[in-house]
Image 1 (tube, rainbow, N blue to C red):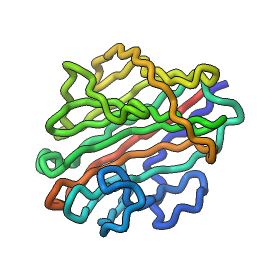
Image 2 (cartoon, rainbow, N blue to C red; image 1 turned 120 degrees about the vertical axis):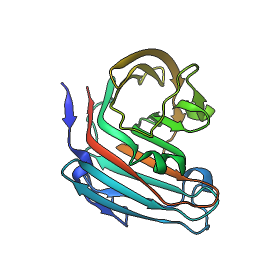
Image 3 (cartoon, rainbow, N blue to C red; image 1 turned 135 degrees about the horizontal axis):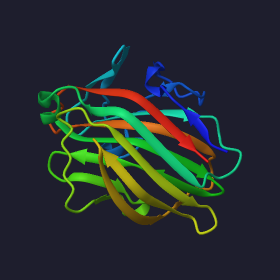
Length: 223
């Protein structure tokens, strides 16, 4: 049985994480700022429009991050397949992309049975396309360069093996180009949580330039 949730970018952004499905939240300092650090954190304005949701991120200096994620109803069984589709996830303009340190997502994450499975992509102006490799953090997908200066259509599929505690990036389609990936990643131990979520993240540069992104037609599905 396949479970599908569509149009996720249309929901509102909240300031407090109440673990309520279909609410976007910004949990605070993550990524380059060192997790739950006490460093100053920037602000985000989340504006749904007819063509997608505009995300305006005004970071603090020194690589502040804008992590935005949504908790969804928890699967009754560990998923065997995850697919994420996004009509667009890119900087709003080429000028916005030039101010980005990195943009991450769309991210689909399942946490259950003591393990965390995080299926995520990222792009930055220096290293091109990267995938999340669990304990090995971000790894480059060699010979693949993607610029988020223009609209990008995304769809990718991962498989999960709850017995072996691994997830595998099967394939990725970017603007009509299919890339067979077939990279297996060990899941990370996480005994204290059960959650399924979808996320996007905008990273600021060293000086904290503000920039905007556009997110549209975001769909996650699992079976």
